[in-house]
Image 1 (cartoon, rainbow over the protein chains, first blue to last red):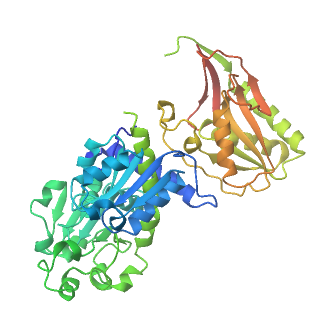
Image 2 (cartoon, each protein chain N blue to C red; image 1 turned 45 degrees about the vertical axis):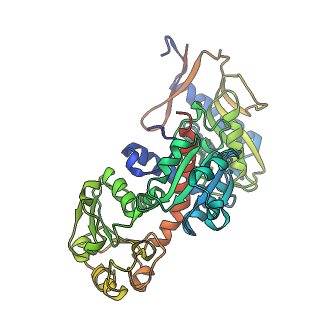
Image 3 (tube, rainbow over the protein chains, first blue to last red; image 1 turned 180 degrees about the vertical axis):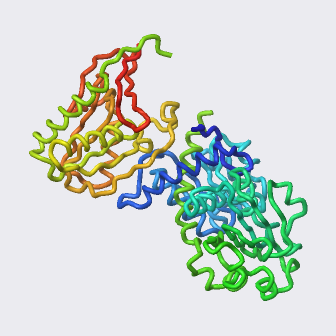
Length: 310
Length: 178
């Protein structure tokens, strides 16, 4: 079994297949803690974790906070409205001030892609990426992979369709990196305005012309959120037209394998990316994704603490 | 690499030790009412399964068997010693008010046992915890003593005691490596 040698987890792009497998297998073991009466182990007792979220988040921040608390770490949450960023302080200054309070891990979400790499070079503590701009969202990628592994017992050889706003999706990038390293075949579909040029270079992916082509015989259909806060109004005419061509409904879902699983990183625009009946349907694994998020983040926090040694 | 290996217990010696421990467990607990076995992963878990089978042969009743992984309860997280993959704890029954026999292969400093007891307490409040080990090699850091011991083997810290398991996870040999 490989050791984890990284001080930080910023992108699945930076991790080997063995390191990703180690994070997933540790998360599988961590799940036992989340299912018992006393949901706590003393592993990170005495460690301080700062959740520095420059973008709004419910799921990810709560999940990281629960993960830290279940490992007995102390947590501090900083959001944009309560931070000095509103007074014009730079990211580097905020981080150096936080460092003076001796955190062991900073979990950060930031709208600027690559900001975590900048911070990791400046700070000796571990940096864990909770989403950076349109770059990567490694914890979401890992929890998606764990959920697929739960369903199929493997990732090798799965056909995974990722549909929607690929350009602005850090979730898609992390999934492409992770899934292709672990042997899945990834098919992408989305409006041409939402498909980044040269996306094929990210890994072993196939760009499809339509949703129907991508989800044909797929084991997994992963729908992405329309990120209106990032894309402005120029990339699609309106939500109704998007839903018609790239929305997942009970009819087009029949093109996928009969036991295909449906996933979404949330929050969902019901009726746009997915019909409500699919969101709440038998093939939906969306809530299981959220459940797996805590275990995956426990695994990440545990391993960066071990990786500090290197 | 160890230069010299001495066999402390062979297969039949291990079987005799487990049979004796089984009789001691039955005598001390006056049967198997409320007795459960919990093995410490990984060697202890294999031995707990063997012990349960031996108890069944003697008493006709098989006690429930669980497994505890102590990696997340170690007191040295972040040190090079702690770099082991996190295994799975699997206790498919309540330990509340049970007589828990904790099983491990080798008892040395006692830190693993302390971690295992902490982990067990997080699953409930057993009536009591007893400790069964195949080998007690001394060198305790903590005030912990085994209730059932297969063989006491005084060792130096330079030596290593290793329990060898076959492909079916049966203990087949105990080696002292010098």
